[in-house]
Amino acid sequence: MADASGVPRDADLSTETVERLKSCSTATLTTQLFKHGLHNLFIQGVFRQTEGGGNMVGPATTLRYIPAREDLDHLGVFEDWSHPQRKVVEEIPVGNVLVMDTRGDTRAASAGHILLTRMQVRGAAGVVTDGSLRDLPAISAMDWPVYAARGAAPTNLIHHHAVDIDVPIACGEVPVYPGDILVGDAEGVVVVPRHLVDEVAADAAEQEQFEAFVIDEVRAGKSIFGIYPPSEETKRRYQALRLAGGVKGG
Image (cartoon, rainbow, N blue to C red):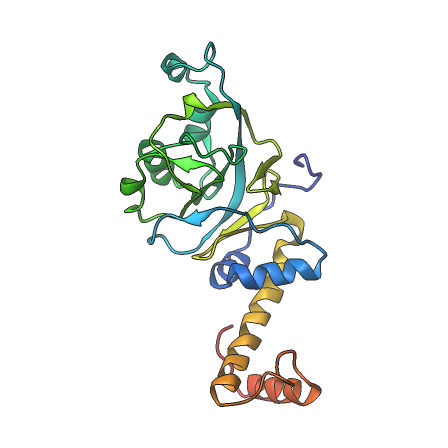
């Protein structure tokens, strides 16, 4: 099965790839994506809202909102079990990340504490919205990755009409296709195209190892010239240290 980007979605992520992504920073991942010519995959205006839960890794399940209209968006719509916002909360696959497109409109919440708790209990890997969340004081205490622009008390129905699940969306000015891999840390969220994820994860892990070596060199008083980026002599020293088991990380 392929998604709207034409990329197959049915292959599970390997445990090795997931562990590599969880241990790598979004800064490192954006560098690796830059090497592939991809410059706009760090979601803008979205910030970590919880301290617990560790780094976030998981395939994207998407939810798209359009502007609300008063004759269609009233409290009675939530009684409909097929309402897209309610439906995605009950059907998001275990291990997936819900990514919401609110057009960057933060005047009303895109979800709240009850819905996020339901997804956490069901085994979702986290939530990302380029809009707001209500009940943010309660959400901030969750032991689970949550990313949003800010808090806002008003219900989503005031400004948002949920229309589509698992379609290509824009979140924080970044294109997100269903099945793309979302990686989040304390700095933010990066989108990794599914077909590149194993290669990007492996190269990012190697970059993190090398940068740990560079940090040690800088702390020892060395200039960045010749080590960042590395000269041939620095590369030889790094490889020798690595073979000797003296390089941190893995």
